[in-house]
Image (cartoon, rainbow over all chains, first blue to last red; front, side, top):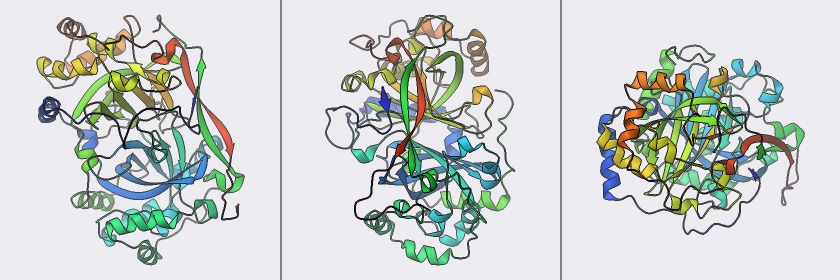
Length: 243
Length: 233
């Protein structure tokens, strides 16, 4: 019915998104709610990370991602992922990050959906824009040993004006061929934030690599295979008539 | 939902927490600064209506016609990010390819029944916005199946659906939420009787087209990279 690796049918629409600008009325309602409600879980997002990811079913498709990160405890983080860091940013997915300690306890069938972060961090691809490197060092040391699981719900890079299809599993940059970020993509990001991934790579030489990266993670590296998600019709277990 | 969730792992060390706070004062948080609305509703799994979840949506407007929401299992600071939902107006829904429409659910019943609400916002103010939500369609995926006790977000994304008629929502779940947020769905239902759903009626292909839907994982082979030889470790 719908798959993460299929091009969806044609949709009318111009420009990056469809939809009219917010009316004054809506803006006022928004402001009104804002004053009355507490948005505690969102206030827990304390880090903005900019990095890159590839679609697990097509590593040639690479995107720049903006993660807004909440640390729930020393071993677990959850991220809302956007396609930019400005106010027009589209919510493109969610990534979870866990320590190697927790990761090792997962069954292999689960581990294959996760990717490692060591290369991404050591090579300077993963950055906290506008934060002095030294402020982030402790966190980077911790994150270099983690694994991530990233579902992308809006494939903006193929021009979708709305989130279509099934969520796609994403993979992380790796030192091996298909995992290398395209130079033009990296250059564009680095110019925007006036940084040099190369310089960061040098300054991160002292970040400890994990002793070993679990061989089931970054599944494509050993298997040459990716994953796609399909949505299929099935019998719905129900307690009442539907719809 | 009274006990805090247990996620495996050690408590955050002080050094890590301080860095987090310092960094957040310098960076651009524009996308999440736009999140202004907390909306509480219920979802069920697209293949199993008996598995029902309380869902706290934190929403922002992309524009007048599109909203995007982060879904948490509670409105507290230690809440788990369990999914996402997108809301679109009817006119946009009608432009979706037919194969896509079943993945989206209608909001008319949820809003009119009172079970979808904005915690802390007085009725008359809520209703101004909910009158709009009533006519929209939503697409929801959950990544963390907390209702089956998962301590981590395991497995595949789950397509979620919304309630469409009386008798579907578990009464114990409903009463628990009503009590904790001091609301009465029944009372709100009466106050919202004037609201109308999508202008063209609920599309027959929406809500799974009336069928159950579930996600499956499939292996794929790599497309060859033209200019660079494939190297596998």
